[in-house]
Length: 342
Image 1 (cartoon, rainbow, N blue to C red):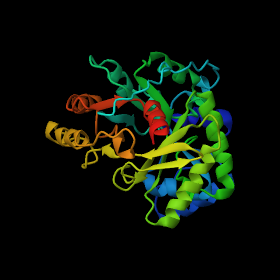
Image 2 (cartoon, rainbow, N blue to C red):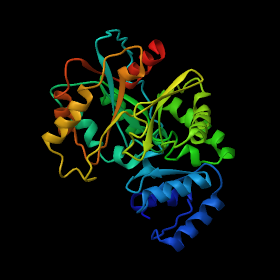
Image 3 (cartoon, rainbow, N blue to C red):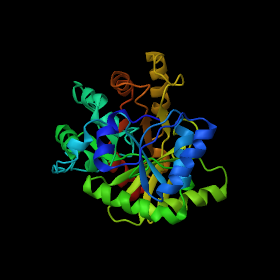
Image 4 (cartoon, one colour):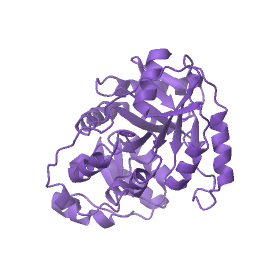
């Protein structure tokens, strides 16, 4: 659909480049191109209709990389910049049974161009007077295109900022729609790129299972991720319901937790123009109603933050409205508690 910033990289690397208008006929063309490309080939750029594009790419075994406004990568990719360890190196152990533990995760970390073009939400959060633990999804393959950017972001982070792989690992796919024959190669690439990017947990996006068969299909796909030592688990975004279709459910695969979002801070208008303190108060009240139960899945919640409707000012207000018995932690801390106590 759009490759604005990728022209220099396409020329340098000799990428096959094409444009479509996202109608029925050109979707057929796109499908033929994806068949020609083969399994586990990244498709850079973006489209008009996200859902149909990612579904088609997944079914064809291609990897979507949102990057239509990623600039200067022919130059940036020539640098081999060291990827530092994350600043968040201490996974705290929380044991208070009177608290409910929440991890806040900023979604859309698969979006390479978002990080490369200023990563405004990240730096706005760093500028807040009151800091709080927060988890950021991040594209593992960005280190292949611009290790300089990864180095900068990791270096500027604090102990309160933790990074995980964006959906659904090496790129944006739906694992239950991905060909079984290609999934092993995709998760191989995911594990390698996560190791290079110092990421231990993965965010996965798919559809909410509607019956036992679909639950088994999802669990089978999760096993492909869980077979690697350096992938310790993940958080699952399930559509519909704005990633909160799983309602906090946890799958244990190879004794590793894969937890679904219990709440999604995603304004219903889809644009964020109507986010009000009243709506944020309502969302905070929902979280404040969650029980304290350290030995049950009900005692833990992961909250999705939708960056296109909820800004950092909104998020800071939401956090200020949480009660004292709600303890914010990073995702790794919540996962360790889940493994230990459930």
